[in-house]
Image (cartoon, rainbow, N blue to C red):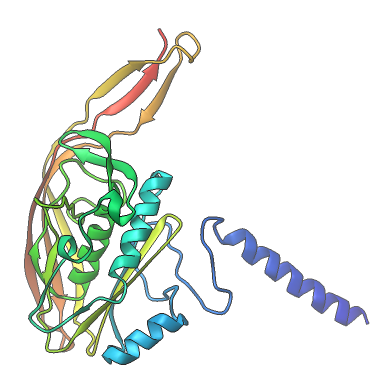
Length: 290
């Protein structure tokens, strides 16, 4: 009897431990193992592994090989930005890109307006941050950019943000603006490529599926120069006299040269130049009450 009670107690302790370890903002299907990273990067265990809609679409397209999957973790997004990311992710899930076809994010899911259900979220307008309808969809472009690079696909069009972003390394972001800036990649393989995506809380998962595994791809970055971030003070009468509080944690500007190292199955490597990204600094914003 005691052994039975000890066994029940042990199982209860394990279940409680799992609940503590899983972040509150992530809904987890208890039947599958899911990668829940703390920082952006490649992932293997995806939340749709037993999703009937995904499995049916994958079977129809015959794209059973995971080429690459990337998860972007954004910790400082507003609820409306998070909503926009999830909406855009649902819009690209299931898209098939045929051989030699070019995928355009703006053509596929734009415009990012209220008619399509998007809300006002924070965006970069030059060196300022402001709320615009569709704010947050750049996180989709960024995640697609990394997934397509890791899949060794041809990047046709990509723009970095005017200022750096906190959710991926310098040189690995992509921004879009309907009618002016787009993110595009080409299916330079001999088989169709199938996109699936899902937003869960502050994480965006995007994967590309095909019929062959691509070679190993590794990002490399070199900072060519740095520009220190200035400090901007704003008065907040609600603070105690002499008190200061950081409202926005700034980031330094930089010119960053990026390339990837591609390693084939025979061990041979080659480098592919990915361009130079120029970022202007994001100012530190400090509230104070003199």
